[in-house]
Image 1 (spheres, helix red, strand yellow):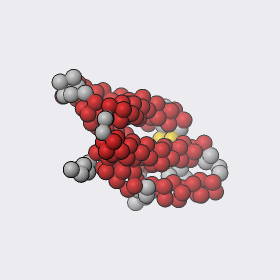
Image 2: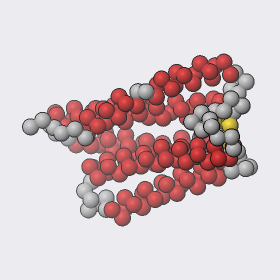
Image 3: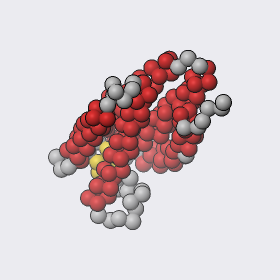
Image 4: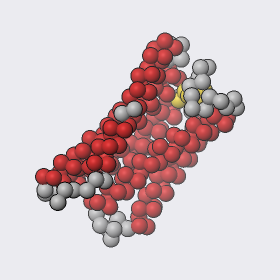
Length: 191
């Protein structure tokens, strides 16, 4: 519905593609920050960081692009104007994002948490963990699942009309999760 004023279907799909790519591409930077905290810049060099970011971006971009174009029609527009993801697109996106971003974020976050010795650092990092977990569970996955359900349950418009506002309200929680992440690693420790 963000693109409601645009009537050209292919423009809407391109804009949706860019939005989804940008949101998912941004996750790799959390992985890089965690890796830098876990290892030094000597071990996780700038070259290695750039390589990881580049490969993730290429795999995500090309895979999504292939699944969106004609034979697969991975993303289409519902009659009411909402995006529909076919199961192939959904499975690909969730698999790539989970394997290269979500799992590494949580794996490195837990490793960092258990490396900390002071109670204050552990407490602050715990807020970061809760914030990142909340972003994934309450903001990222519900939108993915709704886009898939729009494709699968196209005839059950009443169910979708109930779910859309609920997931939109859930989206407001991004402020809470981002605040917890900031408080976990952005705010200064008291002396």
